[in-house]
Length: 582
Image (cartoon, rainbow, N blue to C red):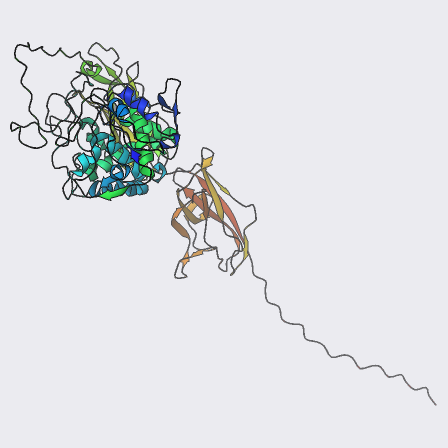
């Protein structure tokens, strides 16, 4: 049987550039949508990240933190590298079967997240293998499955502090709640969320009442929702690429995740928790060992004998300590306040998409626009309105003129007022609130779908039922509430006490119908009409929310008067001719 050969990069050579070159050795089937350029590097056929993923390092789930660069085994008929080759490119990490194993609890979390997203966002088509690929690259499947029975990691998995020294500069946003650092943020947990992203993307995947980034069920569900935002369809390569790049904005990262995704799609299996294969190399050039499997730091400890912890090494004797450079202020540090950037009145009918979007501008104290700043928009209040994609929170990076435009709002069925709140991520400045309103579904025009005259004989029933179509601004008006009433006259809308009528479920006479609603095509078909013994012309008036009104004429003719049957008369006797006289 051909061996699955995994290649481990030598220490010091595990850069993202080397990883990209190694990925190019994989077959095209291992990375759909990935091609090799004339330099032997892989590029995505459509790998343009979204604006949210390109403006700065913090605009991603992980803050573009380091990740494992070990590649999936290559199932190749070629023989294993010779000793001389191995000394150059490294030795295999493991055979394919071991590498394909995913710890039981971790695998269960991925599959449960896929099922949850299949219900919540079926159009996303999220495969659990994508979560497995990201989990492998981010934390080696929670350090090979080092989780308890509830799915929480046995010790925190923390990335390096993002202080701008070799990494992104992301100042503390959670007061150290998740990462234990009140100065700078770090990526947290098996899916490596930075605290500012977890603040809105976090989910409770194991129904214990809290969203914990260190719990694989919570983190996997959060990652699924994060990858499915903006209405992306992950069954298409373009949206799949965008989603992965939004998680970590690196083409090398994209190629690596795509490779693991295809590897897991070809088959995987469950292994006991704690026995999973742990990667070795990571994108910042550091390596792990079997005793410290994570590419990330863990909670510092004063006791160096404690597993999974580390203590700073003392400086070498005689070597002066070089002070860290003073961090350069980020754009976020310069924001003084937020200003509205010309947002129009936010109003929409239930079920419709708001035609106007929220625009917010970040400014310095001098009123100068600030670009590359993350603005978080949050829907607050008693409403079921969401942003496009079904989320109640959206984070957008300001453009070169300091403006962030929120995704379109999609009105739910609940009418009334609510608020969209804009804040700066990573800096405490005053929030900017936008008022929005959802009104009831409405129609402005009603018309009959037939021009057949509606007539009936007194005491009988109308042959045709009344059907109307509702529109609003020329478009179908679905789900609009309506009322139908037999009125006294064109100038008197009181209920008529005679003439045509409807019947309720018990057969009783009813001349007013409420609680009616147009269907998905804007159609409303009324129940059958009956006539009493009164002949004449009568009026049926239909009204809807929004003011649409239609008056329909009904004609009842008098019943024919019964006539007595004609009685045949007795025929006259035939005359007798007189006999001639004799």
